[in-house]
Length: 460
Image 1 (cartoon, rainbow, N blue to C red):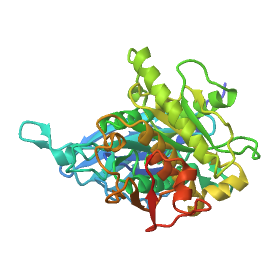
Image 2: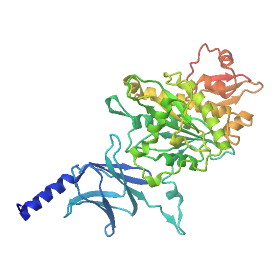
Image 3: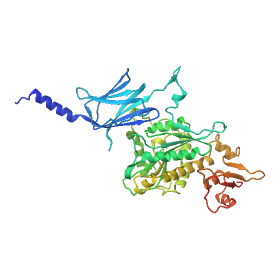
Image 4: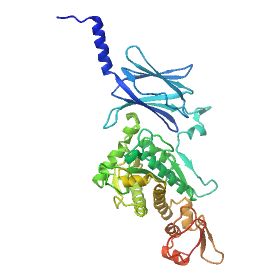
C-alpha cells in the first residue's frame, strides 16, 4: 500500500473543498416602503449565520463553504440603512459579508431552493424599526411608513369616497413574464397602474390605494392585507399574460373561484401567478392558511357576485380596444384575490409573449387606453351600485349634484362640463340617460367630446 504524503493529502482536500464550494454569483438590492432587501444568487444550497454588532452598527453574514464571484462595487443602497457592503474569506472556507449600517434594524433571512429556471437564493431583509411614542404605541408617521400610499381624499364631506386598491403585479425580485426585447411584465403593469390611478384621482368621489408604489415585491397575502387595511371597496390586480406559443393573444379578466377553475387556461394561469412568492421571495413562515375558517358562504357569495358584475363591465370596455382572449369572466383559485370581503379582479392586459401585443403594451398610448378601459368598467359599476354611505350613492339618490354638473334655473335640464377621462357613454350611464337621447339633445352625430366642452343633460 502506497502512502500519501501529508502535503499531497492537504492539497487533495483543498481541491475537493474548492470543488464543492457554493458560488455567490450575483447580489441584488431592492428598497420597499418598510424594508430593504438583499438577494444573493447561489450556485447551490448553503448554510449561513447572522451576527449583529454595535459601535459601529454592522450586520455580519457568514456563508459556509462559499466564495463570491460577483462584482459588488457598483451596488447602491439608496434610501436604506445600509451604507456599504464588504466581504472577505475566512479561514476554513467561509465567506464573510459585512453590511455597515446607519440605523438600527431588525433582520430576517431565509433560503429559497432552486425551482425551474430559478437558482438557490439567500434573501436578507433589513426591516425598518417602527418609532414609538412614549408608551410604545407607533406614531402616526411610523404607522404610515409601511402602509400603501393613499391619494386624494374628500376631507369636508359627509359622504365618503369609494376606495380603489390598485395592485401592479410582480415587482422587485420578480419580473413577471418577459416578452420580446426583454420587456418585463412588472414594468408594463406598473405604468398601467399609475395611469389608472390618475383616472380615478381626476374624479370626485374616489380614493386610491397603490399596493406597490415602486419596484419592489409584495407577498400575495400582504397585497390582500394592505387592501383590507385601507378598507378598500374594490381590488384590481393588473398583469400581462404569457404563453409558450407566441401567437396566443388577447386580454382577459379573472375572478376567484371557490371550487374548480372555469377553464384549463385559468387553472394554469392561477398556478403560475400563485407561484410568484417563490420568485419574489417570501419565506414559508410568511404564508398563511389561505382563508382557513374565514370564507363564509354568505359573505363570499356577495363578494363574488360583485366581482363578476364588475368583470363583465371591464370586458365590455376592454373589448373596445383589444381582442378578448375570453369573452367571459374566467374563475380560478388566485391567491391574491382571496379576500372574503373585498370584490376583487385580476386583469390580464394582453400577452406580453406575443410580439405584436408586447409592442403595444410598452407604448404610453396603449397603456393609457387600457387604463381608461379598466377605469370605465369599475366606474360604471360604482355609479350604478354604489355603497350606501358614499358620494355616488348621494348623487344617485339626488341628494347632491354630480361634480361637473349643474341645474339650469327654471328647467329640468342640467349643464355638464367635460373633464379629463370623460366619455359620452360614461356620462349617459352616470345620469341614467340613454346615450341616443344625450346625443340628440346636444346635436351630436357621434361620441366625440373634448375637455372643457359644455353639454346639456336632459331629465332622465
